[in-house]
Image: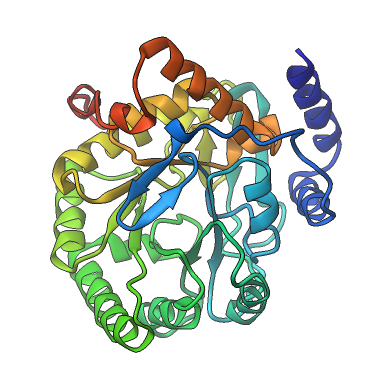
Length: 364
């Protein structure tokens, strides 16, 4: 009851500001060190180990919230098992003109067309260097500048700049808000990009004596044939897994469509992204790291992603509506699920319903 009241009051206060102002206030609050939860829920049954990464629980913060690596440790202290910063591009960029973020409260959703606004590699690198040596899994989501003459080179630059500090990398080619970026999901361009990424990682792993996992983040607006091509290239170039998915350009059954361009996130994305997630798991196999994102805001939706084949789960829009204490609340409920089902750990539930979800067609 108290948790629900806190969420309601926090949302009321945050929604008195326009979305980007509210976001900056949330970052400042986390930077201040103000406690988000009374105590972090810890349950060894929620721990996940995959591809050399070990996290205390499967809930992570998706890229987009902490674009400039300002608060990864505060997010971990709020109960998230891991945090992903970015998307970071080599040079700072302001993104698309405002207004560019739109809440859809009736749908528990958001439309954004931010356009990779961030302070660039140098600023994020300095902050990650300052926290170097602290515990916790912090991934780095890398992207390309809008006006770059060599977008693949921008990704290689990100890999090189952050290699000594990142727990893992996400190659983000799936944002709909940078013109032409999703063209990199086409097989020929993707093959070239991943070839250069793989070559640079091999070089860095030798000089730095560590192999940092690299994941590819894809859009949910994809055909089965397109997914076949993407997964084939991921496997051919030795990437460690994928994140499914980014925002969608579709507008599935919205109660309140503002008619704005951009990527839709939140609950309306859940079904589409989970179907694509399961189809990805069937194609990529059981050994690859698969992170499910899109529409996660409850223990039930997080569990559904895990059952569909996700090793780990990310959220962002859910935090807009439930506050930064959302991870702790979901993890408490996941422990209750384990109590009820008798499953020894969350790992035992991974992929138990992949076949069911994968049998569904990707929505038109």
